[in-house]
Image (cartoon, rainbow, N blue to C red; front, side, top):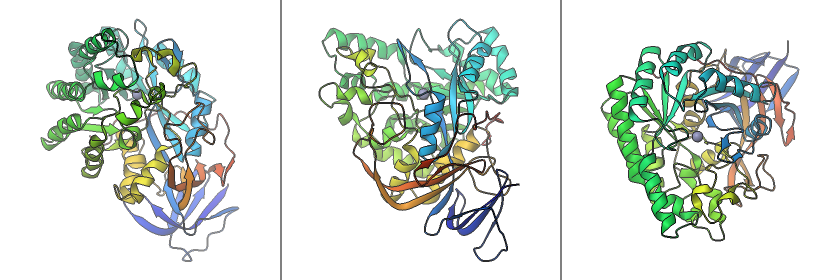
Length: 462
Ligand SMILES: [Zn+2]
């Protein structure tokens, strides 16, 4: 048996903040006690005096090795989970993809093959359904039984991932019957495609037009439609990467009616804006993702939504493409820029900065980054908190250290940082994953294959 003791830190969970020592045995948290009020000894002791002791981050939205058009997201499960650990995240939930014309089974097996034996931290999988039909609908209960309990549909990307309203309704009906959670990319893709064509015909080819054609109203319209379809089907709904104030208003209205409707936003929508998309010399391509970055004045609404619980989760939608050779595919045609930003390593720090800046309380930071995603996707209380019985996924976090985010020092396999040069207050010091030390004071001690697949239960908010 290996015993680990973390002494003297401020243990912060979504529920409370308490000065406590944390005892870990064989990968599991077994007890918390007031410092000096116990007789515990351990082979390994971490002094967390003056530090926070927080649950490892749960990033419920990543895309390792995602094929996108002619290219593939640049982080593998090996490099991406290592970078996640550097940033204090100890669980990711990635998206297995069903390519059109194949089964969910084939897509899920392919994703298991990519991840198995390569991850530094634990991981779960959602399933992207790009082909809703009789046969894939019949596959859903089987996947739920294997712990893949959430299914993502797209109202955007016609011809690739897109589902029409009838298909969406049918998947939602199946979700209502089985307890699955439908995750929605809510943007009106067919309308956006018309605007893309018109913009290109006018010679509007720079990255900033990506933000102009993917209109906030078309995100709001799709969000509204998804909510109404979910009501008709009697299913819950989780809207991914909410970026527009108008879309958030749709979620808030639905929640005011008591509907089981949930929303996620991402750090890029909280910290970046269309100003970045407009950076000259094609630099704006670094910030092309969908839903797109919005004008700065949307940010305050998103922060408010996080405080009022109209948004419950902050994930990264980590989907990195190198500037050289990947983002550059869209030089002269913004519609060919691969959609996605790197961020899995930066989320915990950026959200702590939001605590420093007064947008969030410490406990809300842990709730939106750890506890709520764990509950939303059936991993709580094994993940997302520090309590007896929980996995010892624990981060010792120095709230006073400062560091500067940069591609020169980050660990994601991508040649730029979306937050280049930004100094943040707060830094990960030590990371444990199921009691094993993955990172300690700048030394990486993790290994591919430590991370295990996490079969998940259904949504714990229902
Ligand atoms: Zn995504």
